[in-house]
Length: 328
Ligand code: TRP
Image (cartoon, rainbow, N blue to C red; front, side, top):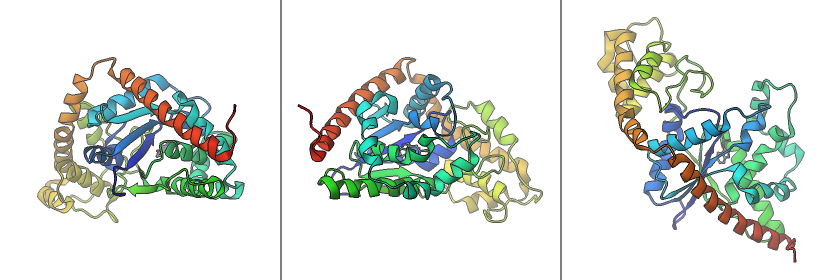
């Protein structure tokens, strides 16, 4: 981490409520960075929703829901700038000069984009799908972020961002820091159905907003295996080990100790432990959520958008100046 207070930017697409996977994968990191005094920007990436679908559904609901999830998880709106793509014109304008700094070949090599194209239900690959990593560079560079806490799947985008920052500086003079990715040390949580990851859209996640009964119901339905004795062996017993890991993360303990405690109790005993751990873990998050006023998310966004606009305007002015495009 740089010696002075780092600028940090992270973002989420507003496609549904945040869940435990998000918490341990990135929210916990954000709350820690906030505590350490970082200047933290949290982007609600609404334009990025359109990469793999024709229409962004329920945008207002999901956007305000994300803000509520952040605040409930411990993000302090007095210290953190929460904002949206669509509200910050100068950020979006950076995409144009940035597009000129990368080749089509570089864009087409991006493994995350390739996977998303394969998974998309759209008939044709849109220009946005192909170029959104450049837009993501604008997200990161408009506020001159030094650090970007992300999951592993975002590393190719991070590389494009670093390339764009370097090339811009070489061509036009030093404007941007070359930002570092900050990987969470918590590996991705599997879905409760055993799929590769917890996902907002697959119903295989425990939302941070779930009440105690819904939490119990979701965990009761989780996949396990036929072996009665509970052990922690992520390679050979992914579903059971994932449940053990959820309990361990919630209790901040070693997963092996938890597996040993459950021992011959089988899946039913394991699920009871997981349910209790998750409910205990979510208790303060639920309490904070119940205290949020109805209008707070909108107010927080309004303030965040204002600050993001001020920062983006300043950066765009520097970019214009460096490129010699200042208008009279
Ligand atoms: N692509 C990220 C995701 O799907 C969301 C995102 C958009 C992002 N802009 C960002 C993450 C900038 C980090 C930095 O999760």
